[in-house]
Image (cartoon, rainbow over all chains, first blue to last red; front, side, top):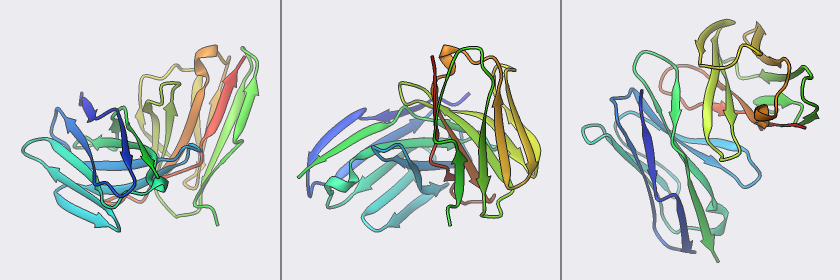
Length: 109
Length: 112
């Protein structure tokens, strides 16, 4: 069974700062998802990646398969980025996602 | 226009009652899921259906019974509700392959 750990659990930063959220997992995976959960509760899938790096606007996600580690970066952070960011990994051979406990990000104007 | 919709959005009920939550997706995806998010905001998969067939059934009490009348719908029926069933239930769909999942808005269930 995969164990997924995220760090930090909580992160508060000033607007404009560069943000990094980390995710580590214990067993080889077929893919990793980054999700964003807004204060209102809605969940949006940001990225799914199985190797390398993906970029969407100010968001960048990277994954190192050998080290079983992924990072989510936010450049030029903005108060609207305040949310819980959740890492989830997909095991080989099935559709099951195992979730991390999330990182609560607060960006102060 | 909503891609994945759930009804109801809120559900308050007494212990012992039976209730259903409905999910519909208009994306043409083959795979749908039910997830439970507990009071500590931890998400956990409950069920997954692919083209109306059950493919994942986690260790969920058999009071929970999913039903997929067609591949656009995945409903969740809960019998004999207990206090511990209070949570937010999210439906999601997936097109398969290296694509992201699409989540519904969630159904907040409170059992009194």
